[in-house]
Length: 346
Length: 232
Image (cartoon, rainbow over all chains, first blue to last red; front, side, top):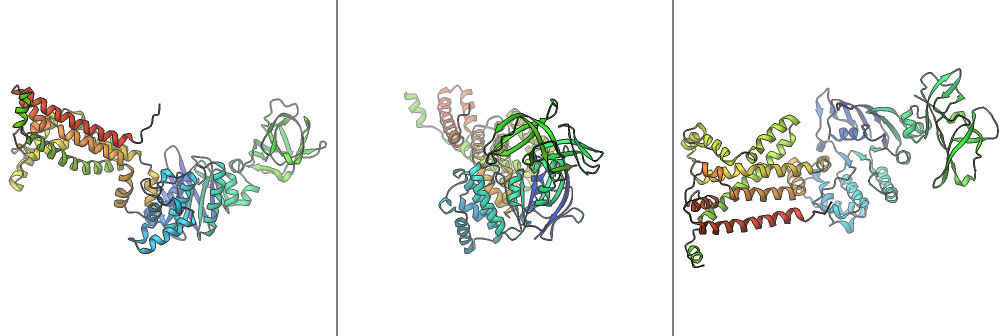
């Protein structure tokens, strides 16, 4: 099961130019809003037509500008889960799901049976005669998932599936979506701006930056070595500063500190994850003197904003310490970062 | 009082039936044509959309007599179109009931078209896309998803179209004339009896028209008011 995408489209103020392929089960498109992730999904489904390029789903070409192939959305067999679910407002849950079987001809007996299977699979039996406006967010999403799966798609496209839900429901729906994509024999594409969802659900990640793909790689590689500033930020790196390499050291401009390193000339940024700072007893390599500017109590951790001691114009660095560790940072001291935790970025 | 009883005794209801028939037929024509046009216009690019939209909305903003003038130019027996219809197909528009219908349709059309267009514009495009990715045909999508979703807008457009077609005067009087029992609609009848100084008969017709207007307003409120909330 595979997906190949290589498309270009000019929207005037914004240009989409992406290329990626995957044989994996779940690929996540991670990026800020308006960076082209959803547009890519729409191009795969055939809702928008790229200016040029090629799209293949499971080896079947659905779009190829050179060969003038452009299958209609109804012929592409994509299962699209829309952000606001896009349920048919004047149809009941049952009718919505039946509509998912448009392709399987006119009312064969099996249709009703299948519909009931999916109704029970998504705990919608008691809601089958309700209209979408009578459903909660989670119920709407379950209905949309059932309608999508019942159409027997070749590929599943999930457009920000949890963004419209509150926190508790989000977790619950994530489990349902996880079950769905695990059972599904084919590629699933997940569009999101939430790095935690990506980490929990995806195998592979394509990081978007302003219409282009910054990095596309296995999930664990992206998180351990983000390579670019955008990727580091999107994977949750809180401390980022412009930087340059000189004489075997990386110098962070915003923080006015430097670390020994062997980075190459491409390095324009440095990143340090907020959890990866450590308290050093004394001045040692890879450490710097700090002073605490502010201490903020978070749910399960303390967030310290620190800066280089005495450097009143330096920007602060965020340092997070779990409450369970029972560490209270002294007002002044030395902070150390392991060389492997210093992210050198483009 | 006795005068009213006297008038009602020999009251000629034909204008009512002519108006009603005209209104119903014109509404049916406008319903399909307006929805079709709205659908087509929304598929156009921005520039041609603005141009076509202006032309289709024109009968609403220009004087009905001006529309009547153009219709007369088009359908007059001395002109190519009117002549062709009469000699080849034996259809006469001018001074006939068909003229009533055409005049009313042209004048009322923008109401249907604009309401339908506004309703389509309000529809969440994702709903349409969802139907397409699920494999629904365009025809089925339109009648099963779009029209039901746009119900209130389309329905109020239909009612307004009917109201406008029912009371049309200017273009009708020019194209269809005012032939009693044939093209004499209520509006034309009122104008006629006023000319003769018969204010009592005119008054009866005015009351009938007001009652109809009341029903139409109630219908519109019923259609659009159910979900209306106080926003500010």
